[in-house]
Length: 309
Ligand SMILES: [Zn+2]
Image (tube, rainbow, N blue to C red):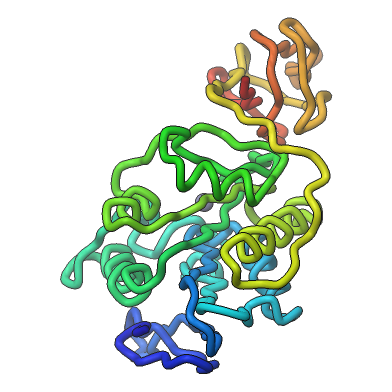
C-alpha cells in the first residue's frame, strides 16, 4: 500500500502531510493524513471530511473516531483526513481561496488552479490506493440536512453500503459532474456520501449518526469486531424536491426535520417585516422532510424544505 508516495507496510501506524500549496508568505500548507494499517490483510478505507471547509460535523465525526481508537482496524487499513479543505476551515468557507468548490473540480490537474491541484493530489495520492471512502458533508449555508446517505440506487455496491451505514434516510442522488464521488466511481472505488446537519454548527445527533454508521461499515468489511446496533431501518427515498418560498420575507420553520408530512401540512410561515402579511408555507406533496433552511430571511423562490418520497 502506498499513500502520497510513501510505503505503508502491514502493522504501520503513521502520519503523513499532504503538501498542497505555498502561500505568498512562503508558508507551506500541509494537510495531516493519519494512517493505520493492521497486520492482517483487508480492505483499505478512507475517512474524509471538510472537503467543504465550513462543514464541520464530519471533522468532529473523524476526530471522535480517532480519539476513541476506532481508526485502528483489525484488518486492512484506515486513512483519516479530517480536514481536506484547510483553507475553507480556517476561513469558515465552503470554497478554496481561488473561489472554487473542491467537490466540482475532480479529477483536477497538477498544473491547474489551487482547487484543481488539491483534487489531483487527493485523487492520485490517496483515493487511487484505497478501496472505499466515506465522505462526510453537511447542508450548505443555513440548510440543515437530516442525517442521510446519498446513493445512486442502481449502483448495488453503494446502496448496500448505505443500508449497512443505516442512517435515518437513504436518498437517491445522481453522480454530479466533476465530483469526488463520480470520479472515484470511474476508477472503481466505492464512495459513500454522508450528509448530516448544517455548515458551521456542531450537531450532536448528526455526529452520532455519522460515527455509528462509519463503525457499522467498518464492521461489515471485517475491519472492526463489533458495531452499534441498528435501531430502525433506513427509509429509502427515490425522489425528492424542494418547497420554495412564494414570497420574500422573514421565515420561520415550524415543522420538524426528519418527520413525515401530508400534502397541505403546515411547514412554516413567511412574514412581511412591516406587518403587512403572514403567509403559511405548506407541503405540496406528502413525504419526509430531509432538509430545512433555517435562515430567517428568504427571497422569493428560495429553497426552504427538501422533501423526499
Ligand atoms: Zn459538502
